[in-house]
Length: 379
Image (cartoon, one colour):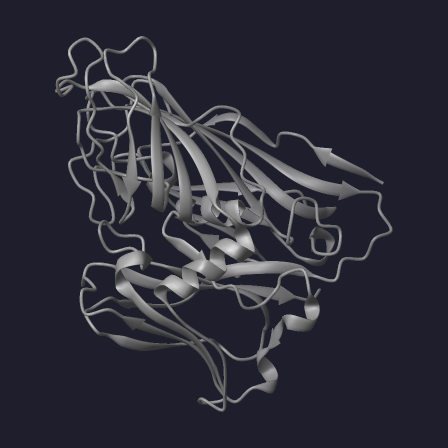
């Protein structure tokens, strides 16, 4: 047997500034993951880095049999999940500044980890597999962040797609991991919501997301609870800080670097919701490296000039290194162990199954709270 990693699309131009791009996938082989690399020109303004490729990539969907959903995620969700399953990778930090090509890499994983030979999608057992990309390169704001700019259009945005296929193998996969949103509601102070989970599937992972400026999980969430059979069994109920502590123990701290050009103290979305941000001097800029806390999913630390230590008031390039928790405002509930099938939940045997989400008195009302699930699908 051997792994095949070969372009099915290389430097393919998107048609238009927004819409749907469909990529036909091979119809044979065991599909482990799909690698997607994007290159888009930054806009002309020097101090508006609010929109990143992962935000303008509004939906990635892996569809088979015409309408059956295998994966349905936003660009930021794909990046967050790849940080939890340790498949996140960048050859160089993603960058965002004027008239410069920006790059980001995405990996849509059908298993629990990179090249998981137990969980793959057998393409011979489905029809018409395709990857659908919903994009909007004209986006100027998102999720409460405004004042951004559209991507440039003098060079067409492009993508490359590389399916990772196991060929000539006698392995029979146990199935594949389907991931999609299963519940959502609008946040509000002191709101309590039972986020009902559809019964029937076998689940091995649940995720909470609150991707909105100032209204991430760190602010909105008070308690999270896993509730089975209408409170007959409550195996998991923790307040915010204890919940975060369990996340760190289970998955550790996350790191990501970015290069961008921005005016001092501009608000811009950060890749991690809480933690620390460190800045290095970049490209001989007259700005001293700064560091500070990061909270609420955005960053606005002040910078000083090297020359006289006054505030740097003009747009300048910044190389930022983030270290913290909640990548792209998404938390994997540390209850089921994706590597231990004994901890997975067969919802077909349950009466009721939900995640109870309780918000603080200071919770905002702008965020959409989402519940995502990993479902084990047998083929």
